[in-house]
Amino acid sequence: MKILVLGSGAREHAIILALRAERTEHEVFVAPGNAGIARQATPVALDPLDGAAVTAFADEHSIDLVVIGPEAPLVAGVADVLRTHGVPVFGPGKAAAQLEGSKSFAKRIMDAAGVPTGRAVRAASVAEVEQAFDELGAPHVVKADGLAAGKGVIVTSDRAEALAHAAHYLPSGPVLVEEFLSGPEVSLFFVSDGDTVRALSPAQDFKRAFDGDEGPNTGGMGAYSPLPWLAERFGSEKAFVDEVTRDVALPVIRRLDAEGTPFIGLLYAGLILTPAGVRVIEFNARFGDPETQVVLPRLETPLSELLFAAASGTLEDQPEPAFADDVAITVVLASEGYPEAPQTGRPIHGLAEAAAVGGVSIVHAATAGPDAPGGDLLATGGRVLNVVATASDFRTARERAYEAIAKITLEGAHHRTDIAARVAE
Image 1 (cartoon, one colour):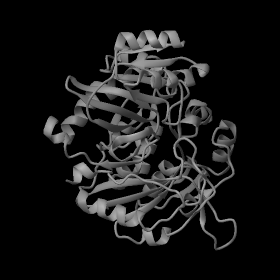
Image 2 (cartoon, helix red, strand yellow; image 1 turned 135 degrees about the vertical axis):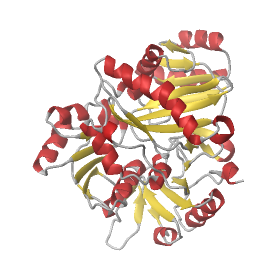
Image 3 (cartoon, one colour; image 1 turned 90 degrees about the horizontal axis):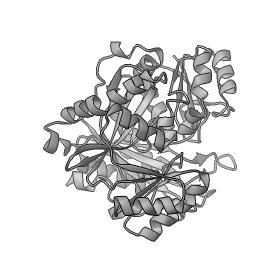
């Protein structure tokens, strides 16, 4: 199969590694990719936001499937252009992608579908934000309504800090002030062809920059899968997945279909387990990062078959995805200053030594080739690398991940040291 993956981050690298792990050999292209991805796929000079250019490349090279990784091309409507020209594509159209592109749209769909979620107030001014604070109380939850690269949310009891966050995003449009919900968070992915859904394995990520969930919110500093503690509350992981499929995923997919905007792609449900039950925090319209890096290494069902079935409307013919009993964790290596002002252009050392640790793979997020032949790779963004480790238990997986990340040097870089620590205990 000829596959074109759009994107340049660790999520896309993880997708391509999963495709390469299949018994069937694929010809994989990536636009634009990064230095690590270039070792497993053929980079092409293509703007992933240009639907016409992507379609032309797909036609010229007889691409069998286009996989859209990040949210920006989805919200830009690239999938619509491809589908109009008969190119199978994994990723929702522009209208359905508003499930991630607009928090207000997502809340409306959830209300119409009867999906459990927290109360929310849409505020277009500082005065309306303050009124919402008075109504909902503290801690205050403020979300940018549009895309914000995973950094548009603040949860704080400091009213002044929450107001400043809202004021930062209000010039771009309204914000949502939401009811604070308490409990452990879970990420759960669903593959959808617009009618049928197939759930993947749950994961948990770590949003704050520093140990102990301290510091600013980030795009994610690590993750692990599966979540054995779900059995304490639901009896089994499967019982949890079945409940969320019934009460969240299927109602949303059916509601979008009824509105004439079928969701074909990856529905990411960000969930919180409150004392009153499971509630939806947010939806994304694509694979989550860094959760993808720990879910896909455990997937035994060929990823290409799942994605193509969704793109071609034949997901009902696919059995439930199978996962290995092994566990997986990932630890993100971030540039100095991330997330506020990451320092870029610095060389990375020790990648070969880290990759040589048993059960470890290095997934690239923001790297570029050396300035000269034989030189070091360079960091080009905030989240630079993911060290992914698999093992039969979390204690061993953590030992492998942290042994490997200790071998990597990047001036000023930082990472969390407590990823999956509690579950390992």
